[in-house]
Length: 278
Image (cartoon, rainbow, N blue to C red; front, side):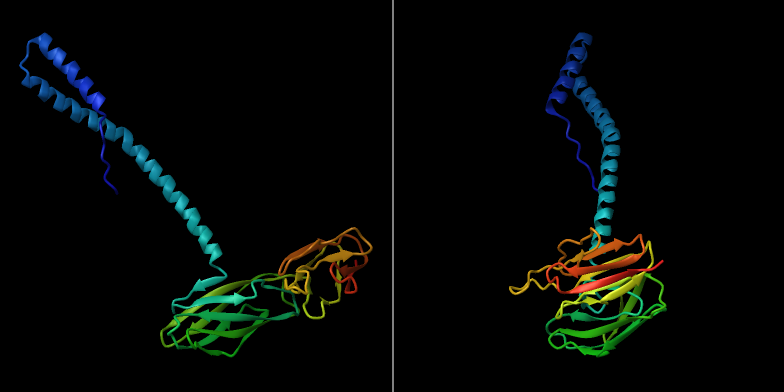
């Protein structure tokens, strides 16, 4: 608790002194009585101000503490993609998207960064929930110059229930052990706009009425020869994603049975099909 210094305005001191001095003259009391009464009056005034001011100070302190809690919560969310482990290493997983669908596999890069003079060997492993399998290549990383990387392969079984999943990565070295958990999302229907050949993966998908399909742009690279965006345009219904940047997603819900063809916004020769079967 910080101590508070209360300052009584000079005008109030002078007013109090004049009132007491006039009262002393009328009563015919000695001058020294004035100083004694003024001292007692000032002590009482200071006590009254303490009672009034301190509760307000405490309330202000409470509000400030509450605001700090919100800020701390926000920073926890931000640090989810890149964190500092107990080993003093900065851990990140790239690319930043973590969307998969049943029967799909993907490879992510686990990046480790530490002190440039640090050359420790780190063993990497992971615990995955039921329905998801993971593996590292290599499973042992030597931090040459303080940094290193390993590929994390994530595979989802075809019968895996869509929803959020967490994969906990364990780092082990001579310094100690550290765990870091990353969140993944398994969607029932996911189509990737892939790079290279600029194709939809998969090219054809079958869903039921009322189900949604999500497209994710993995092709845009924002280079001189690339427009920097992709998109989905349906040919037999009025629906389009508009321009999508790298790693952006677009979701569309199909309400009626039918065959829906679509093409890529930037490269119309690239086509895909959604079969909606009741």
